[in-house]
Image (cartoon, rainbow, N blue to C red):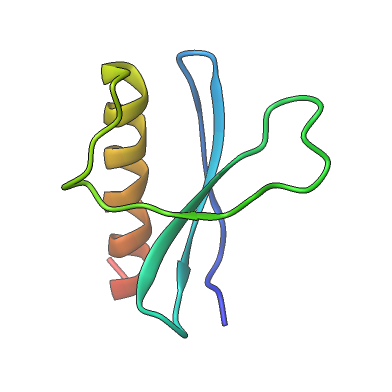
Length: 72
């Protein structure tokens, strides 16, 4: 089961995040124009991207998804 989706639309990236309660993980997908079916990827901040802007966006979205899951 997945939680409510949270969006991050910034720095040229259109991302959506959710919490997967079956596996207790945060998943993030790219929903940029032209993406018909987003591919959900597990995100872990301990494995940053080479692109610093993308890493910051994903880290922020990761935190927001976890806080949403905790009801904060």
